[in-house]
Image (cartoon, rainbow, N blue to C red; front, side):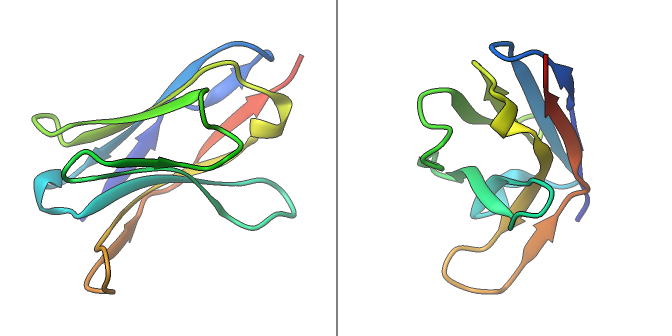
Length: 117
């Protein structure tokens, strides 16, 4: 299974970006899809996740600013990022994984998001 992340770039504080994660197979069969990020010198952290049933969860630092969604017909997961801050600068990764087991755990390559004036 291939996950292709895109949409990163350089933006100014307060601006928006939308990341996309295209999956090479139906995401209906993937329990959960998530976005993670890793800043230099820091551990990778959960940004947002969405289950096949549509339940979402967000990291505390992005609640109210970021929205995760999925388009099952396009096998794509999105991360809408609004009101971006310099501390959102990181490499963003998408992930598809099984809930409650290690049956599968797919990661895409990262996409760089830089927030700077």
